[in-house]
Image (tube, rainbow, N blue to C red; front, side, top):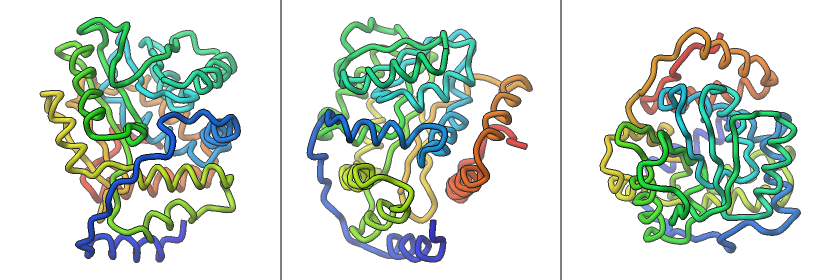
Length: 292
């Protein structure tokens, strides 16, 4: 990523008083086979999103306890879910997605990963049919809330999280925040055009345009009636994290799993991970454990 150009965009974001209208994604569900495949490939071990998935796996560590039943909302092809489940072999994970095509890829990934602590289920995150009240210990949703068409369904999703979560349960939500300038949106979508497919680039730009604002996300999260800490990337809300209070101590065994996962990243992925962690650290969020 071009650091000087990125910094210029972020400073312009900081100084801008503009308000961009949200543009919901053209399709509520990603059903095109080529588009789905492009998205899935971006999150594999050599994909452009691999380091981002590992980042969220690390940042969600404090909210997942051994023995938890963890619900991952809008899991897609399960690239993110499998990264998290690999760090927590002593917890049980349920991946939920509305798209049959996404879940087919998720099942392929699950078979290849050979993780026995993950199951998949089709469902709508704004309804959570089939989940009883207080049925899960932790709810995760990473980079998927912007797929919802409007704030009403965003609020309904939060009500459902509140319903199915146990009183002492953990929450980790992450998504893009709405930027102020179309030029900044295009910069992030196209900055690594040589490393990503055209379909992925289009989807990335649509996701940035469909992002909810920080205020919209905070108003929705307030419906959970839980104390969640909010963090954002410095200077501009390119990415926002909402995380409940720590529920566990990160012991030496878990920390070693994290170090092993970090060591499996390529040198370029480690650099990108470190840059993203630094961007959040400037916004007040530190890594929950050491990586080296």
